[in-house]
Amino acid sequence: MARYSPYQSGVSYSFGPGPITPGVKWLLIANTVVFVVQQILPGLIEYFGLAPQLVIERAWIWQPVTYLFLHGGFFHILFNMLIVWMFGVTLERMWGTIFFLKYYFITGIGAGLTVVAVGLLPFDATAPTYEASTIGASGAIYGLLLAFAVYYPDRPILMFLLFPVPAKYFVMILGAIALLSGPGGRVSNAAHLGGLLVGYLYLKGGPGGGSVVAEIKYRYLKWKMNRLRRKFDVYSGGRSDYDRKVH
Image 1: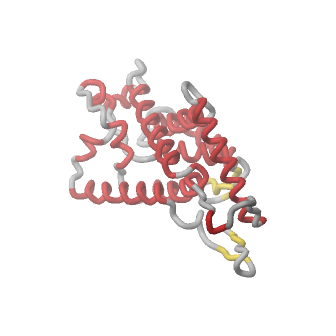
Image 2: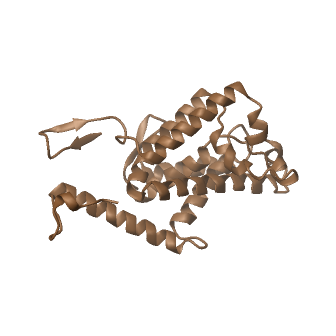
Image 3: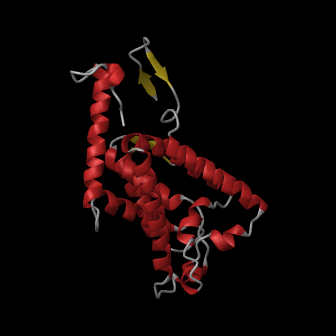
């Protein structure tokens, strides 16, 4: 990634989205700590993973939240946290930490509730979902990918780490794969689809989401204006640069 700084000549290159933001840092730390504890106490999955049967029959209502912090192995958490960092930093800079974390957990919890709903469907194909335990942050991550595609639809993302695809098509392909793959297998396609659907409804003003859209538009406009000010050194009159605060 290339960056230009007005304080030094030339262009500098760096990997990734740049310095880590507070919300992303907290998510990385929390997931890592839980993963370490999970290696010591593997029984955590039974109590804090997401099993629709336990949510419905035993009222373990914390599971649609806690499952987000559990992972099935080193590479599972590694790739999930890389995605949180690569896409979450950009979104958090634009939205702010509070809204970013709110969106992350709403899409993650929404994905978990989608898994529960799919497990309750009266079909043979969905019956295994009712008893299976789902773990991982993928539901929230799919929500982040959806948001990134909404704001940066033409920015390229490496598909399968092989070839670049515009973000909007990248997310469409992931959604199609999850939909066509169905509820079976080791991958929770229901959680992936739930993260995409809840993220879309939340950003596009689903039930009760009108104020959300207004807030996003305001933050996006503010972010664009701040970028223009930094690029062209444009400042409003009447106050010195030392008195300015960016919220």
